[in-house]
Image (tube, rainbow, N blue to C red; front, side, top):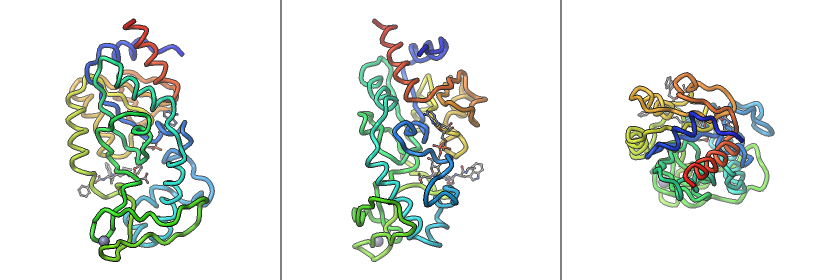
Length: 254
Ligand code: BJW
Ligand code: ZN
C-alpha cells in the first residue's frame, strides 16, 4: 500500500508523535467499535446508554453483564498489525511516540507499547462503586453473553464492584489527562487513529494541537468530526495503514 506523500513526510520528520487511538484501532482485532450497530443481547441498546452512572444505578446487573462479557472478548482478542506496527515504530524509529488511548482494552500493551494515558480507564481495573478501593474479584468467568449478572461484592464494605472505566458525566483520571495534554503540546505530529472524535475532552486534544499549529493526521476509513482540522487524512484501516507507514519509514532511512 502506498503511503500518501504528505503523511510520510510528516512522520519522517517528526521527533515527537502523539498517537490518539479509539475503538477503530481494535476493530481488526475483532472488537466492535463503540458506535457500531450492536449485535446479540444488546442489539436494542444504545451503548452510550449503558456506559453511564445512571444505567449502573438503575440496573447494575445488566451493566455488569455487558462489561463482564466485553472483558471476555477483550481477553480473547489479540493485538492486530496496527498495534504491532506502533510498538515497533516506537522501538526502532527516531521519533518518540506517546500513545494516548480512549480504549479500555490492553491491546497496545500486549503488542509491546508503553501507554502514556488510558483516558477512559481500563476495563480490567476493577474498583468498588461505594468505597472506591481497588478490587480483584472478577466473579465467575463468562463464556457466553447473558442478560444480567450480579456484580461481585467489595470485600471491604460490601458495595458493588464496577469496571475501572470512565462513564459519561464522570471525570477522566486527572493524571492521565494531564500527561496526554503535555504530550500533545510537546508533539510535532498528532496521529488520530480510529476515533469518531465526538467524545470530549479526548477529542479536544487534536483540536488543541491544530490551534497551536501542530499537524494532525487522521487514519480512519470514514470521515469524522475531526476530519476538518486534519492536515492530512488517510482513509484506510489502521491495521493496513500503520504497517505500510512503518515499512515506508524504514525504506526512507535505509
Ligand atoms: C477504524 C477502523 C479501522 C472503524 N481502522 N478506524 C457537549 C460538548 C462537549 C462535551 C459534552 C457535551 N455534552 C456532554 C459532554 C461530555 C461528554 C461527551 O463528550 N459527550 C459527547 C457524546 C457529546 N464527555 C464526558 O462525559 C466525559 N467526562 C466529562 O466530560 O467529565 C466532565 C467532568 C468534570 C469534572 C467532574 C465530573 C465531570 C467522559 C467521557 C467518557 C466516555 N466513555 C466511553 C465508555 C468507556 C467504557 C466503555 O468502553 O464502555 O468511552 S463512551 C465511548 O466513546 C468510549 C470510547 O472510548 C469513546 C470514544 O469512542 P471512539 O473510540 O471514538 O469509538 P467510535 O465507535 O465512536 O468510533 C470508532 C471509529 O473507528 C469510527 O470513526 C470508525 O470509522 C473508525 N474505524 N474501523 C481505523 N479498522
Ligand atoms: Zn467497598
